[in-house]
Length: 247
Image 1 (cartoon, rainbow, N blue to C red):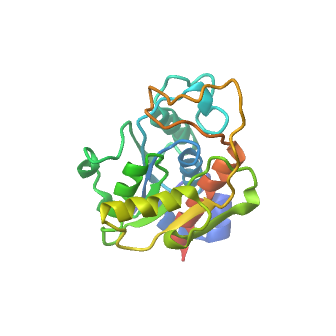
Image 2: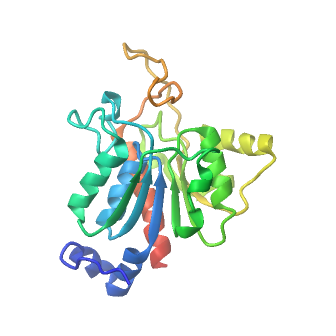
């Protein structure tokens, strides 16, 4: 049994009670991708009492992350995202077991991650190919629950952010492209799963910012993003985990 710090979580315990706090403390969560969405999700989970958290991301902090990623500051540029975020989360709850893995989930690394050992998997991956692989593999496990983030870029109106089962997501280009990818692969998720999404699509504005992909992160051409949107996406993913634990 995992013990939780009653002093840190007294306000949460007032709302949920000791039994649910114990269940939250014992849940095991892994987050793939701790950028604009995943970083906020991670912090909310730890502040809510999640004790066992693993974070996976291969990128380092760059200046363009600062506008929306929790651990990105001018002081953390050049440092691995997962390491910076782990250090921050440990200051919130020093007793939490937080594992930082500087790497990617892809066809070459998938076997290293024992998804069945986790109660919850959070998908906040940007790469379409890797995202599809993770979704298919998680939904093949027997008891691991998956929650996924669709695209949080090119959004501004927070009131249009929604939660829906993947096949019922409407107006989101990433969900549409993912469905096409599954059809192309001839492999489909074996279980239903909930997604956070928005049907808003704004155009990128012309600016002096380079539109070239990052050579470091090997990510596609960037889109405009804002902190209030990515933070809500991340917090809604965290809320799905907490709600499922407490139901």
